[in-house]
Length: 43
Image (tube, rainbow, N blue to C red):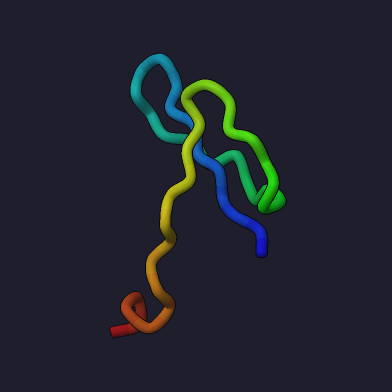
């Protein structure tokens, strides 16, 4: 299952880098973020 990687730039803005494979090693200022559950979003 692919995961989504986000990066924080020098101004503190969060940018989505996209989906990566499960064995991806995070680089500086990168992090994984949980996406909202589909059922919670619809309610």
